[in-house]
Image (cartoon, rainbow, N blue to C red):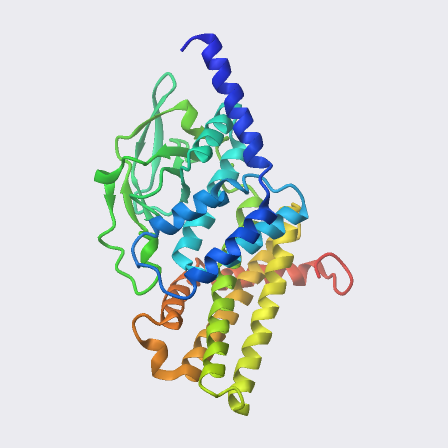
Length: 379
């Protein structure tokens, strides 16, 4: 490529990146509300939600939160995640993974990699983060100047066969973990989604992708070894999936309320007592998620404990609302095509995030050790 052309590409990449970073999250939220309201009136297909994802791309959602400039932007992202999660949890999981991936590339990538990211986002390409892997694990080794070969596979790979870029982790020969941005847009032959036979979250297509023999260049290596699990970003970033889950809990609560009104059960004191407890749990969860997002995006040292505790708070609210809605609505909540059934199946699986008991234990230990109560940043 001629030097002048290369310079032009770099300038174009930086211009696109500035457009992406300066996206209006508040405007996106306003446009998104009407869209998700329609989506929440009927269940989408339980295949990969390609059309709905295309709508998010067209709305600018996939390029809106590469960076978060201040508290208002964090609130906009939280609201966006809640809205999407309330309308389609599979879509919410895919979208949250995309946001996670592009933020990691932007945070740890070099100027050339950021330029490439901006061009990808402007072109509507979708990213994901895949960390889970079957034995013996994912490895990377240098095979020549600027070339590296991958070996292994990734499992529970959300969007396998449908997304364009996957930010994966792979171990160097010395055991350290490296982020690698792989082009998986043409990886169809490497994808196996046959084992993804689940009751909920079917649309995520979280199958397995075989990376054996795939060769990448140095441009695919994002950051330094160990950056993926660097704290507090690694643990505190979990606030995003709690926001997606919260959106589904809130949607389920709305459908429960609508059922009580439509069937004339709203005057039943037992029904009111049951939904009252669910409202309290859901609003409490929203408060925890909001505070966790603020602390995480501020880079607070207290963020990790808050986010870990928030995971359990949202889980408990979800379980309470799922059980309460089933008891209130009865058999109708289990029919195919029911929004309550779809949300319950999807949420039941999505709440099964890794090591929930360990997360709560770590959070409780932090509160005990800190010995700080009342009017301080922990609250």
